[in-house]
Image (cartoon, rainbow, N blue to C red; front, side, top):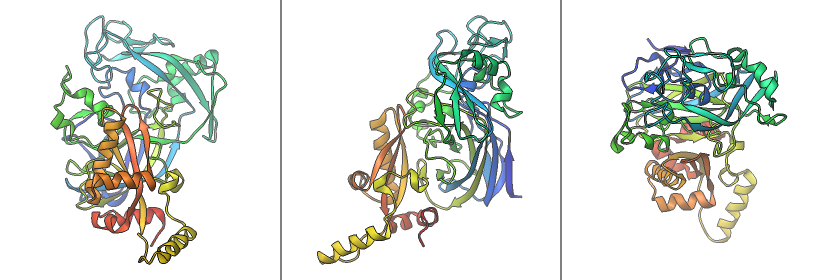
Length: 431
């Protein structure tokens, strides 16, 4: 029997599986409330987590069938960590097979996905449980620890001494959920940006549906996913299998409270999962990682029948839209209608914003992917989408090397034909 609200505080082992056991189902129109664990660095230094992140156990959605879409309205995001840590990385040769995010191994005893323990604090704290050797497959090159204020509005970079104090009680400062098995990155105690003040603007780096083939969670996108093609480990994929991804790992800062993320359904029940909450991130995530935190997420779930999309569509909050893509104001519409009247034209086009996620091996490939997805859903040519995104929208970078948003105002008649108009009108307040 479908539930009004499904609460989630359990996690996968880092692999998204089409045949995975799902919680729920949540009813169409119901809610998912999830306690998420930090992504990136914590799982990266925990070899037993096989996907590079630690995302929530998937939730089935009542009535969601392959070929449908599921609209997820992010009702609320609450940061629960009181400190966060991150930085740039370098993989450690000998401690992985082909991909340090996916196939970690102990360099000394050869154990694959070895259980680990923490000994003290610092960059050498993660140890193989079997033989005691250092076991982190990544080295943190330049890193920071940020203490977060009680109102979750700003954070301050700590110096080495203060960062070490946080490290000694890392799990509490990270507010790790009880079922999380990750080694908190706070245990490294790094403090290379003392005094830096950052603004919190939390969003979900991972929000999506289960792909049609088993794959590591951090690789459920066209850029990181490309590393799986022909890889020398058990999660290797072919190019055809990679097309079954759902691009749930976006790292797009528009996926914050108030936004709607529309996800493809590629397995029965959809399998909604979330994770990798970021306290803040600039476009591009140029450091490769950002300030990951634990938090509480509330989603409202709606099924959109027979909306066959290949990847996510985002309806950002209005202030996050590129200036040219924002809904036209009453005065702008009046001025435009006057221009049309002077030139003997009929009424102007009615349009509303929509943002298609594109992913690929680099930004050019990701942009082309996003353009093609938009053209397919809205029954346009790619050339028309390119023009609309140029004069009535923008291409925005979510993450390097290859995640973008193709955002533009689309004709409402095309949105209606695709099945998107009701949710777009609801988001942007037009009847």
